[in-house]
Amino acid sequence: MKRSVLLGLFVTASMMASASFADGKPADLCQANIQTINNTQLSDKPELKQRADTSVAKAKALEAQGKIDDCIAETSQTIVELRKSTGTNN
Image 1 (tube, rainbow, N blue to C red):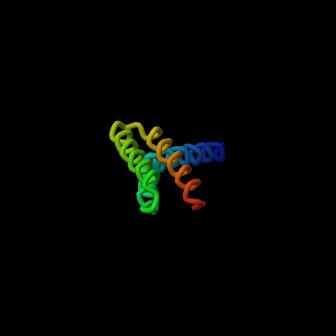
Image 2 (image 1 turned 90 degrees about the horizontal axis):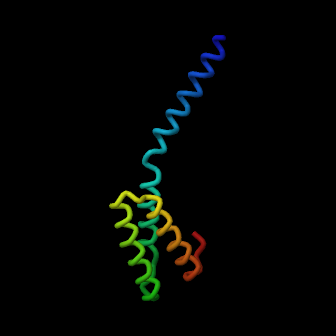
Image 3 (image 1 turned 180 degrees about the vertical axis):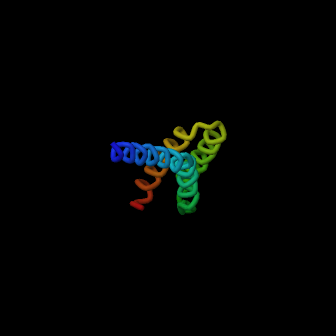
């Protein structure tokens, strides 16, 4: 009986801790993706630079509206396009 109670307390504490640590992650991912796009060297490719700038502006607007999932989707897609176009895999 004591083992069951201890196990239950441990499981409950673990679930509560994991939920609290995960709270800030999506917004952080959105910001990290925006930073990745901004750090990409595109000075010799004006069409890609324009696409990146448009995507960052849209992502920032989505983030301001609280649409973090949409921000992450927008920036992730742009990063994939930039990597394909520039030939980088990082």
